[in-house]
Length: 153
Image (cartoon, rainbow, N blue to C red; front, top):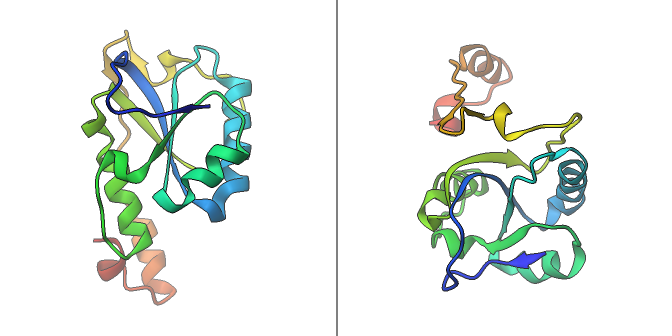
């Protein structure tokens, strides 16, 4: 594990894997990191960002090859809503100036087969993008009485 140091000159990667997590998801992120270690054929660098209060816990309890960051290393954020807070952190990784592209992965994810840079970047330059309209998802949220307008927008 490498602790991120903003003042140190670092190589700028074409692609990194970025994980935003926190202590309640510790065992999920541990499982994700294990799957990355198993299937990351091109050794794409992994950056894990955690709430500042959880930093020491992750530092002392994970033993993988990844860079550990405090959320405040990315951007100071005082939003109280946990979902919105993590979206701000994920959307601000570019501020670190450590990569041209990043794949933000939720800590409850897991890789089940080998993956390569070419799975995410076309000809070493252009990232693949996938966009979809979440119409069905939003309709389901309304059916279970969640105010999708207030929750997701």
